[in-house]
Amino acid sequence: PTRRSSDLAKMTPLAEHTRLERWTNDGEPYLVEYAGSGKLAGKKVIVTGGDSGIGRTVAVFFAREGADVTIVYLDAEEVDAHKTKELIENAGRKVLLVPLDLREQENRDEVVRRHLAEFKTLGASSSLPYP
Image (cartoon, rainbow, N blue to C red; front, top):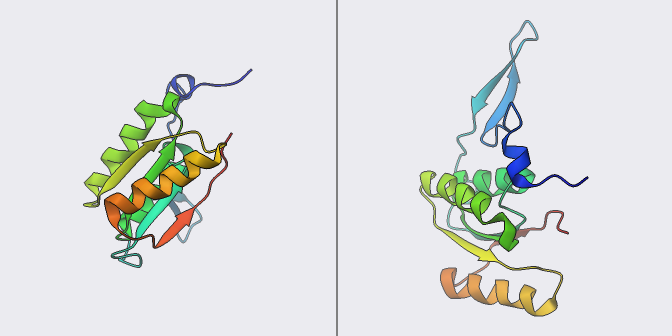
């Protein structure tokens, strides 16, 4: 059976999308918040599948590195996309949400059109697994 986002949200522990695992000298793991260092300052990026999972982590880390982010996701993932939007805005960056199915070429063209209308340039893109 296929899991829905609502089912995944009930799982514990929830994913730590903004934290990295580190280890003490004794080999004990612990988590630290990822801060970023400005490596993508001024960049404008597109992240497909950026609403949740690995895509959310990539989108948030790009923002913490200084990039403004366009997130492409399916309509059914609206709630997850808004959570990612909040995380990006908390990093002090701009975010554009684009709910489109990328299996159609005209939708892929539309993503780029909307991104350029909002941000005027494209500095990088990250294509993550999509249905």
